[in-house]
Image (cartoon, rainbow, N blue to C red; front, top):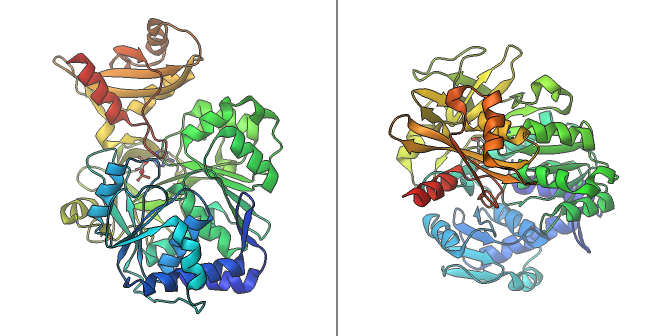
Length: 489
Ligand code: AMP
């Protein structure tokens, strides 16, 4: 089966019902099938051949979605670029992926052989053949390249295939969204280039509507969620924190059945407040670009107070292990690296054989780089990224645990904890926080001292106007650390 088959069948089954909505533009299932056929044919007519990479720099919107799935039908490899990144970052990815074509809105960040401005798309679509565009590819051939956030080193592209994409869709349908119906509505509040995009096909194949929000703000989200009766949405934890800070949220009349969140750790304080305000609709997913959004999930009914620190249980058809440094599988309570295996994982890193060999075992097990442990009930708990663990006086400090405590202080809205070089201790635990009310750093440090073992307590704390985040809203501890090191030298 190919991705285009799902779109074609949805067109036949759900006809004139709304497949995609963006402001006052609505595209039906039949129209979506036809638009993607036509654009796919137009791309082939421009000389693009199966397996060619096509970089796409488009804001959240219908046109971007049409481009994505036209590429799939034409056997081309999608390289999504996040509009919030800089031109230099885009240029790097275009070059690294050896993209032959670039579809762009606004100013092009680079010149490649085939340049397609977004304004040309309607004409290309209109003039193209409406025949089915059905370039069939090996399920193991690249379908898209997903650049990892680049929180460490230069971004690498993860190669995802038709096999992995179809597995991702079925993982979602089996575990996370088993109740999708034609009257379900997915509101894409986050960039479809990233996590939110994974929700598009599961909704499409079930005849549900995908509504695209051009840009997230709590008020824009609430207005759209109410107008369209959104039943599903996806947010990274920062967006949830912003939503909960908005007073209108408490009184909004929402039809949400699943507020899916993931992509970064969530503070339990945010989660419990969210459940209090929005009800038992929170569903956590833990995944990564290398294993798209499906390693474990925590279902709404599993969000009990004692389980809010868990990342959930493995998806039904996904294997997960926690292993020690020698590769032995560990049992409950023992801390090690999380590995996963299943058809949804990447096939390799693009043009990085050494990184692939380090990450993917020959038998298919993928090293996630995350440290965690099982509890006695089979829930996975994540401690931190392997690279972010601070070693202070020979002890491991998991920054997330310290951030959790900081976030429990009533004046703290955001927190990032890093290790700074220290002659005596190796690394010194240091915090940056964003506050909502005036407070002295010492008062927050005292708060931590009452709640954390000596070696975990921040030795110093700075109040910052904002914590730097990646384009998808993850806090960038590496940048916090670099800035602190630069300021102290
Ligand atoms: P990315 O590949 O950029 O999507 O980043 C994936 C990483 O984000 C994972 O390896 C985890 O470290 C983190 N992450 C994703 N989902 C969760 C979650 N639900 N809880 C904690 N960390 C998460």
